[in-house]
Image (cartoon, rainbow, N blue to C red; front, side, top):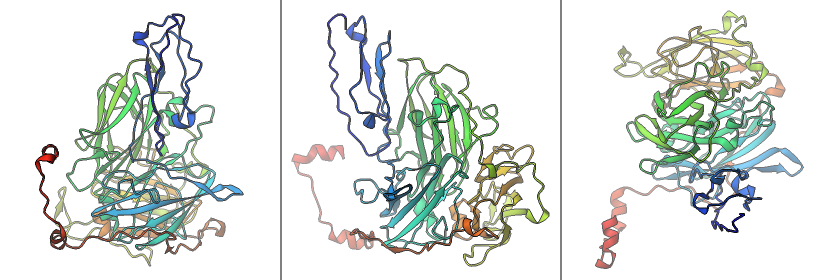
Length: 552
């Protein structure tokens, strides 16, 4: 400084194996500098995930506020399967178990918690690349992996829910993330019939992000990765407290924000019952929903401003958010995140964020104006409980159009590369989910919270909802089901065979499991409690450890 004063700021940046944006605040308020001359901030951008710049006439030379996800969202490490082909990447993920908890973690990362509400590793895909992800099953139960929201094939070594990895087995999944895949926020979870309910309830889930083209000339700054927050909300057993990124009150997730600046908040809500609840934002914030279920909205922001948004137990939403003061985000009456707002610098001051509605892949356009053949029109009726549910009587087991799960026989045949029009009934009781293809709302007035013309992969509407989709690019096993996993577990899931798929669009690769080539061993559940108790020796605190006893 011109006053010959020197300020030495000493700190340590710990390189965590996750996608963090480290934010370091240099407060010069009491230094009484008349001028600033910060040529650089000597921190590696590889650790920061960004750069630091000085601002004249400001009390802040650099402002980076840390948002720590802990063990949540640690990214999968990808490497070229073949050193000579950088477009095909390989990675590994471990399915683990700890008592009744199930979860995912990076292969061999024994320090990471196993499930219990902590999201598994973050899977980031780039359009234009292929990925081979090997699932290592080190739990005591059979499992598999479903990429919820991706436009990927449902057979061969793709996203086929009939594939099975028994304890000690591995499965390699092949994902072709080509130009037909819309960028957006998705998630993954187990989908093996008879086991998925316990495994998702036990905490087996994680986030998937298909990257945007951030280099496009009109891509807004607020939506880029350096301005995004990730929040995966989880409720385990019915009535239990909801967690945000595996954290709960009073240690909930904290997002550090600059006042009046727009950010992108990616949210995934998870509960095994699939029920719809409100995602609430504070009055101190302005919020617009910009994407649903992994697809950017068409209609801009006009219809999506508010402070409460309906989310099912398998929904995703991307939100443009700016706040003036501290607040919190709530779901199912639980606080799942704090918003910590700083006023050091003025942020973006526009009332609405700079708009962005990237063009959809060609196959996702023109559905609403298309003529639909009668043989492609269906009524899908989801019904069945014991006793009365929301005032409607039904003594039958959960089913779809009178059918239940049969992995060997499809419920029918669907024509390839044609627009389908389905009318979905009673989805308010049974959240309706489609694999492979997103549904576009064709009901002129929308379906409650589901807007006309927008795309979703899960619908829970109190009224009949007309949707359209096109069986393009991929086919074979096309699964539909209720996303209340209690209902799915007893058969409310069927599949259609998408026929006449061109050979070059089929997946006929071998999807069989193989023994995992590692030294790890599957989890072995303990024997019954009485037998375990016999082996425990009584332990008494001495006076030396009295302070520990009091703390416990």
